[in-house]
Length: 455
Image 1 (tube, one colour):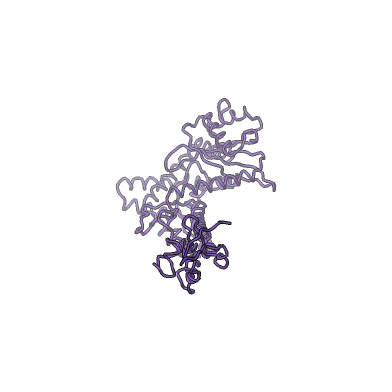
Image 2: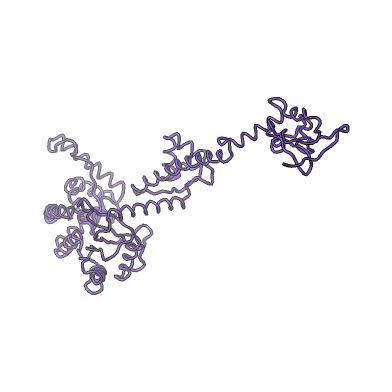
């Protein structure tokens, strides 16, 4: 126990006593200054001057050992400066009012709001990805009437969800998460998770690959790869795995690109049991084709030429080998170009067909009912998809009278070049040879179309 120094008051010795600590938990003694202080007022006290001995118990120190009652008078009433300081100390020590507790509460609220915001943004991105829609708009400024699909969809979601709208309205400008770089990051994250799900479903089993060229609006040479495998339920599954830009379309370059994509997803060519491509020489060549290079590395990776593509090649070869059929398809292509060459002509064709249907219904030639007499048009067919020729031929038969009416209008009211072309096409389609070929190819392509769909 410390030996407190003695001070004399009116000739009488006095000193600080340890028993004064009893019932005075605020009392502190300074050995250096031989003075008493108030712990609470020293740390939390306000500048109240001499009120309640505040200055004495905070800065100078209390040394009047002969006036013990002044220790108790320092405490004062309920709202005294001393008791306010005690209250501040108790608040600091209370867990619910502790600064760390307040920060945790704020942090949890911020996490909740961030989660609401992020989930809304991810939902919008998933919606646009699933439907293959564009994200960005031409003008994404605040005053724009059309900010693009992503921002407009996010706003729509907020307008119909109060909690989302509240978060979006109060989010800091530097944490909106709507920048196109963040959109790309989320898209890439979704792509990675989707790929992981595919690989998990594959479960280290055997698989085949389907590879084809895929070009976008940037006209870059790209290679699309699809996995084909049997899942645990015995169901054949086809899943798009990825698309890669290839600078060269040589067999070696394509093989390297395939290996890189498979390696990226921890897949090996040793598990490959099938490969399917189109009939290009760089793909199926027996010497240096892609299929040959892979077969040299894995003899179990059997090659299958795409049956739908084989059917297409057969139809093209047959059509080109018969001069009358080749001429027929040439006339059909020219007919679609002339009749559908402008919106005005398409409208004229539609009106002529409508008038023909109305006349047939009034005369009892044509039946009415659900799904019958729907609006049709002539679409340009493509050589790579012979099913499109079948659809064009069917529509041409249904709209033959209307097509003739439109050609007659062009022949009368069109420009000189258009008149000549319309007359030439008119003579061709009204000939026996064309009409015979029209119905012949309808029957033939009807059969091959069912096969093409099945393939």
